[in-house]
Length: 524
Image 1 (cartoon, rainbow, N blue to C red):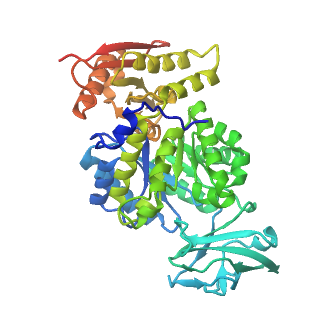
Image 2 (image 1 turned 90 degrees about the horizontal axis):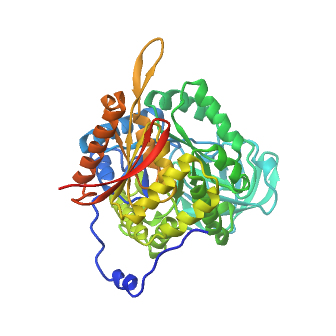
């Protein structure tokens, strides 16, 4: 298992009492921010970017394409203003069970009371009747099953979310007993039935429409496939993307229930990355089992070289300026487990302190990275890869080993697709990986253009990788690539405080059909 740290006594305990080191770059661990009502203005997005947000997530539950287009346009303006890359992630709705509370009036449910869940969506939600957007619920559940109901992106507070126990079914209706007193507020309530298969497609017609229009128009970098349950879900989405000439978006499988857990290995093989949606996993699994799955899943992602992103870490910061002690420890443990990124949902979507939340999570990640046991992780990944290693694996691991041996300040990687940078990052270097993304010329019968923008932004989903998109002119010759690209990387690293005179740099690049590693020293 992961979660190891390096502790040197008494230095480590003494360091707790010292002020945190000032750091001007975001942590190696990436932060995904969900943009919404509290975080969609140009000024607020600029603040989020400066605080350390690397990926902007657009959630289509409760918001339409027009709303998100305005937000995305603001994001693009903010990116130009602060001169910082930011990837775009579309989060599908999936087979989510929802109760729409159109008038927004609070609904009070009392412990031991009875409430009827009905597929008749013409009914007005009340303390007696809750209409759900799924006609097959009565055929799916049985007496004694548990149903969880809360505000969308619920924080799990027992006063704003409710547990129900199924008593019986009557035709299409489900009669439930309320297990705790709560007041449901908001316009959308999310329903989750523990460990029950919902007979709805993972990629819904609504999702297909959003992808074929909004995602296609905006060239999104990532698609988060909600409620991924089988590897076939990934293959279906990829085939759909191909039919709409969307070949660049990477697919992150969002694992949210026991069904996805059971097929995790096959899902990981098909997906480009994994999002562990702990909100729903925490309902589907007993609380004492959630951490086990998290550690096992992140470990599998690490040794496979695929990004793992954790959700639901600082729920209390929706309304508070500081996280709880448990939340702060949870973030640090996720970093020590080997997570690539932290996904903030309600905290930035409708929270009161989106910028402060990103800053706080970044500081916690930074401190955890200082004691991350990179050596142990490196050995585990090497053991998993085995021998004989491929040439690419051998050179990538050698680059990280060399960086450790010479105490390099950064690793510079030349790449066109981003694969080389991801391969180096797989070995979890303790220093940043500066990826120089070289544009490729693409031609067809109608026009020609350069790739590279999306490939650079997609590197923002990987721990420790800082992408820089080179000028198209750099792609014209190998000599120009080496000189201009390296100069670009070093100048950028110096400008942001990553490099100082006499620092050593490990350079990973491709020459002909081979990949090589060299070490250079920064001069005065």
